[in-house]
Length: 209
Image (cartoon, rainbow, N blue to C red; front, side, top):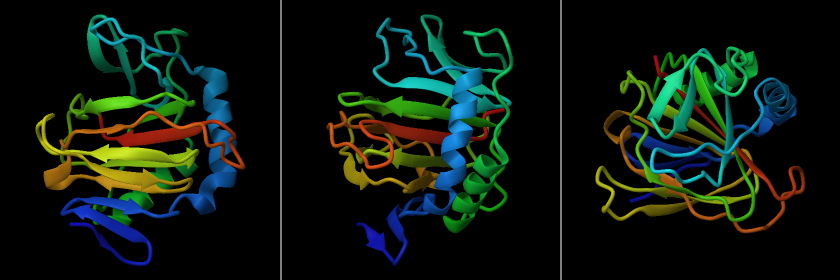
């Protein structure tokens, strides 16, 4: 059952939507994303099964998440440039830490931030975040731009998934008993946002190393 207060929507014991939590940071977040993109451009990676992802991605932080025909992994060097991933902007780390604290997960210090760019029709199938070494730390996911329908399932892919509408500035946090739940994003509708147009930017913080 969903429980809500003025800012926090509780999906289950360890999963929350923090409505509008990132809005005070937007003026700093967007320029920071541009800097990251300038160093490590967005790209459409290929899954181990050979499918090209509809979502374009890049990373910042000590480690970056990648996928290719050999599998999913975290690496310290951007395979597209041969250089280290861009450093995580301080405002990113601050936002992640404060959102995690609001959800009851104190002292969160992420070392990896996956930045996804969605355009109309892009989607993310149900999956678990399980390439990290530290399952004790939560996942913190920030939404900017177009609305998206977040799918929050169970611990088996076949479990029913709740549908949660995420708006510009919302932050999702899940951890504890919910850390390994399946989750995804339904195909985005082309409903342009006044700031980002026909685009959604999502960045997800994790403790990977």
